[in-house]
Amino acid sequence: MGIAPRGGVKRALVIAEFVLAALVLGMTFAHVLQLPPRMHLTLPQWVELTRPDALYRWFGLIGAPLEAGLVIVAAVAAVETRRRHLLASGLLFAAALAAWLVIVAQANIEIGTWSSASIPDDAWRWRLRWEIGHVAGFALMLAGYLVLVVGTLTDALAPNR
Image 1 (cartoon, one colour):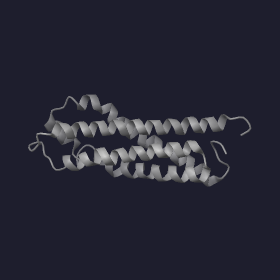
Image 2 (tube, one colour; image 1 turned 30 degrees about the vertical axis):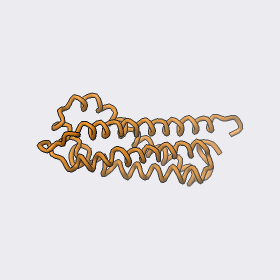
Image 3 (cartoon, one colour; image 1 turned 180 degrees about the vertical axis):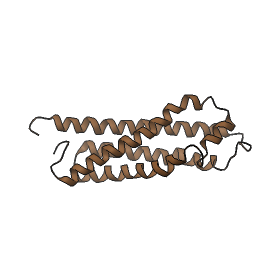
């Protein structure tokens, strides 16, 4: 079974995994691209932009279901196709989501209680946690996407397929 499994459902699962992975990877890459300029913001500016109800609101409303959907679709695709690269990419996508839940979500909860006028003394630690958590999630997501692409292409280009 190669890149395009003969079964329509299996083919649709792999395509859905590619689409969801691309969308989520783009979202996580956006955070990495924003990192350098965000680090130059004052803490009050950073807090106002980072609060869960501000600039990143749509990342949660749209991005969270996409990322959860990716993990589910990746798991089903791995089981249905029995392809090791789909299992590996799915595990990396799940690790990226877990990193967000463990690192970033906790920071979001804390930051959500602040205003630009009420920033705690340890705010820099939460800021660093939030930013590093997004970089870690991107790295895991990119690794998962690369495994997905390389494994799928390797299957597709293998002789006798």
